[in-house]
Image 1 (spheres, rainbow, N blue to C red):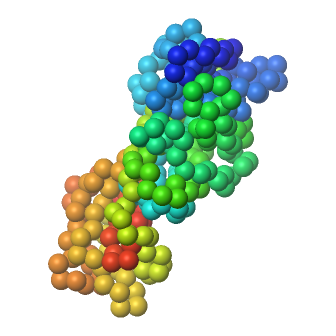
Image 2: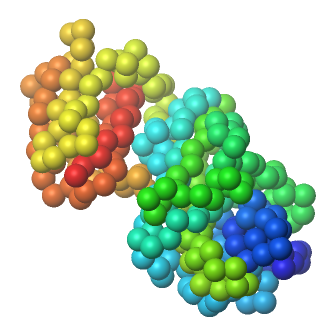
Image 3: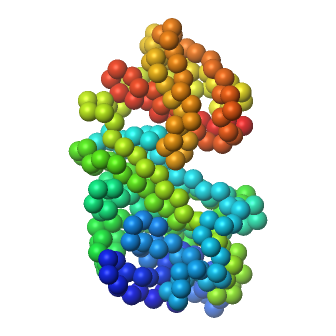
Length: 294
């Protein structure tokens, strides 16, 4: 079912992120993660059922047309410091399904080649694959394994460590493809495919992550209601300018601390419910924290 055809820039291939029809007869190979080049990065596909004869998940359901919600969370917010290590988290939620898969890759915007180094933190649920065909054989794709397809409460999430390039490499984009499978064992029809991307940029020259101050930052309550409280312990002062970003790295709200206090409480206003990242720019670096609003 997984056909590979090298054409032009990379290839037109099949992903079959999780083809649950393969369970029939005890063959679970296709649920263990499809081949690379299917994260919707430049030159990739998405494993959608509308990609013609080479599609793995048939059924004609267009990408991003189902009721699922997806996210990519980068622990650095929307910026990275060269050589620093971060946590990348991938999540999908669907109101009626509980079998899911994913594939994600980080790409240098300038060259469309691999960016950063991957370290798996959950080898029971995730794996990496580097393609041995096509034009981008340096790309390192992170994806599920069979054990990682089982969701809890109609959602699934995975995470891994990512170390930024040792020098300023410019803008980097994470491309991810998600699958919500209907698990009906009938040639993959009815599976839903989604894709999402997140772009991060290097912090200004000379700015590093403020590990010391970061250890002293308290963000509460978390989850938050209408207000959020920030406090730096041991006499440290909060910066004058702070900001809140969504999980796609887009700024949602600016926060001012014009009085130079070490502790402030502010109203979240119309900030939507869900996960957000608050970022503080200190004199010696940046601090990023994730929080949830009800």
